[in-house]
Length: 255
Image (cartoon, rainbow, N blue to C red):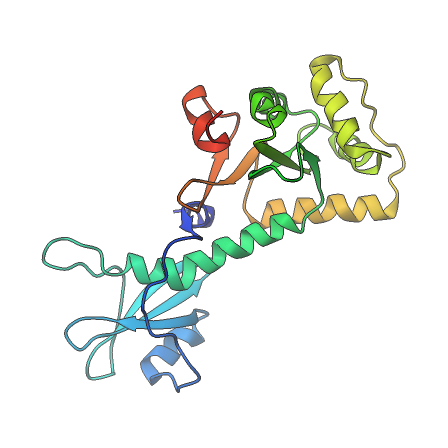
């Protein structure tokens, strides 16, 4: 399963589980061997029948490790009880995936985005957006009722991947005297937009655009719009492409 999949359904607001955290105690030798292979041991949790559970992160993926009572063997994978309940998912959610999701949200918050909507809107949605992307424009149109009502603020993380002049157009928006108005004018005009790509991009703007592109690559995204939002349960979700009408309410909330 692609790494990004594990970042898209992660609970940020779920109640904390009463699981013992991994302190500065010495790790068992068998667990150290797994750590030496590149896994990051992030926590310890209770497990049945004398097993000791360890939550690990490897290449942005969570792994449940179970140390056998003799301390000499390690089992890797999900553990299920007699009723078929997954005993590994909750610890991994709390110890691995929730912190990862929080980090992803923080990186988007710190990225170079252009706001679309009121500052105090109760719902914030991030999207990686290309000025030449018709589906980005479609989502912009879809979101108008929520944005105009002050219920949603879209934060466009500008990138340039679709056409040769996409980076220059994103740079033009980021460099505009009023980026929010420039974006509004561009999206409202649709195919008739008069936005021109910058021929010479100032270093500061180029750095912002490069940082956005790097974040997009880190998240293993390959197309726009890539939409990130918190659902009503406080879970980080992602939508690739303009959403279907039935998904709009999940992303944007009630009208």
